[in-house]
Image 1 (spheres, protein in one colour):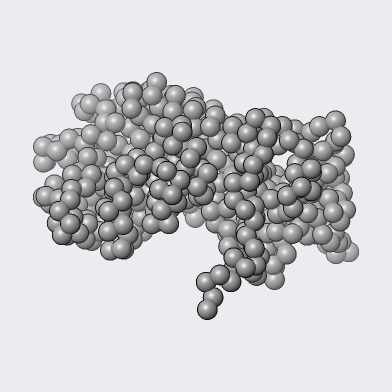
Image 2 (cartoon, rainbow, N blue to C red):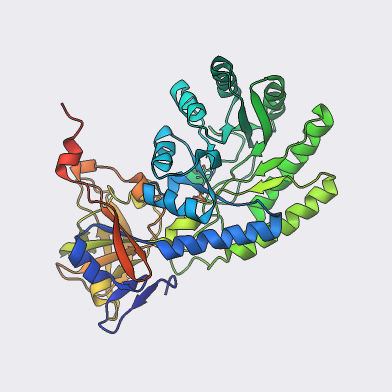
Length: 431
Ligand SMILES: *Cc1c(COP(=O)(O)O)cnc(C)c1O
């Protein structure tokens, strides 16, 4: 199976986190988002252990909120003792509402508004990751006004192509994110930060991209960042105490993707990074990683009910489901691969090639093309695996379709973590 939390029971139905998904679909309705809480905790523990062992005590991952945002996920992060990063007041607000201490929050974003800055400072966000000089000056000005100090990192673009898909490459020089080293602007913004009295610069951040399957892009980025740290030390006397390498470790969405052992990748990453730091002659700063996808993606599965099944004679088969781009826009956005199961007939022969499509008035409303599953009938449950990241957080109400319900599954028991959105919810703000 694709992941160890997916199986087939003796009734020939698909199971997820040990539960019969067809029964869950019948009980809670579809579209239904399942989240394997035990899996999320396990993923977090793998990261935490590997980071402590390889980078030292006090090194822990920050959960990247953009991958999945609702109160329940921050309760888990809090209980597991990790941090989080956010790019909006909404994400910070949700974490705070869940009882998450924002001291452990990192506030990202290439365009923090004045209101965002004020909210972050007022709510005690531990670290601002400042993207550019404009923001730095606005933050300092606000801090001056309210008489506070703020711990900050500077987001630097190392100029790396992490050999990944263009839409998710963010660390290269020509990017809306961060301040590039190559143009000399990273040094300028560092000098500026050091000259301001209300911000406390502790180090640097970079994020090279997403869905990266090996340690190399991280090591390349770390190498550039460590050299930059050494250069800044030589020029200004400032020694960075923290280096945040961002997120981006990949996830196995389909059988052709490799299994990734995160502990092993972090171990390999750490070995090279430590050796480089020694070569360059600097003490290894406190290392931080910001995984999003790799903490939650394989903990998710989305269930749908099959509606019409049709064959366009001479072309192909279409299986229409009762969700689509409103709950999972990732194929429509960037042709993301997914594994699709006919959960009702999981043990039957997969002999029906088809496109699995949503219900929106949009021909791009596709969940996956060219899949081969056991021939579905109206009423069957279809499952799409590895939907824990960038599905619920990217969901919309396009075509006025309510967002799905989220069920958290732990120890073979399920509980509703997010209620199904209703038609009333969707018109609640309309006057
Ligand atoms: C997107 C992003 C992450 C998380 O990336 P994943 O690929 O989900 O691990 C972390 N940090 C920053 C700054 C990001 O933009």
